Length: 192
Image (tube, rainbow, N blue to C red):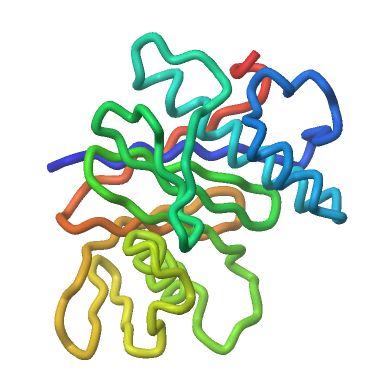
């Protein structure tokens, strides 16, 4: 069974405005962060890029920061020179995550205590699938049903799910074939 590598970073202590992260952050990410008014949103955005950096540093020989990504029309990030690796980024609460897999992948993270019309456990499955497809919320989420290890559209299985928990949050990764989820918590000092 293939492995989805998931790198999780607690962003609560990050100083998103510090110049110490400049060499780890792409120009695109800096522009996205600058547009965010809320400091917690800037921390989560920075955390997603730092989690991506941790993933690439461990799996791409010769990798040097900052990460080089393109954004597809729906916003899905794609590595410019991923050498066969696919990524997905997400953040919620005090956590940012990067999923790295040899096949297309989508990941979502949500706080377990989040109040919502759709139960959080189901929502992370649905959103991870929408990120897998690159469709985002325009992807007809009302036609999807997430079970523990699979997601269905109008009764037909469309993806497999792998789940975990970290820091009061639920994680879910979606792929086209069953895969194990390996979660590694990284911290900023490991990145310097």
